[in-house]
Image (cartoon, rainbow, N blue to C red):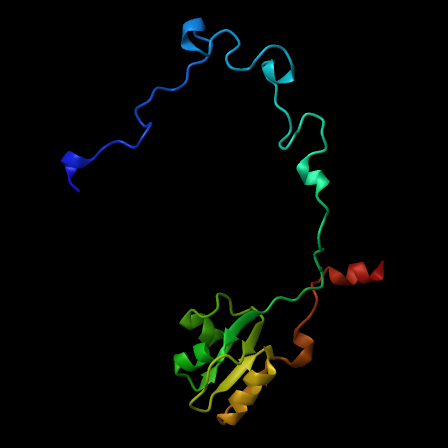
Length: 163
């Protein structure tokens, strides 16, 4: 490809559609809006999804599921990612520095995908059964950060329980 073979994209050089410019243009007089009716009037704008009075699709479909306000989200880290770091002690700060997780304040769950060759001390908020087994088998330690009290429901959850 060089400058002599460059071409404008299809329809790039076509003029803008100018409506209401006489009968010969094909879109004169009513400007493609038809005769009378709500959509032919100036300033007419119906709500998004309006189907002419018929029950709109977004109201015909059933609602599905719900949002659990007590949900606690964890950042998942597998053992193979931890093994790649080559550290003896893995903390949230180490994971942030290595770019494995984005925030040191995030709740971390360690999963057992991968193998460990050396003994590593891993600090996390939760461990899967296979992950803790593999860490101890390699001679390391799986340490839970702050015990069970650190993982809490959102702050506004207490207000909802009171009701």
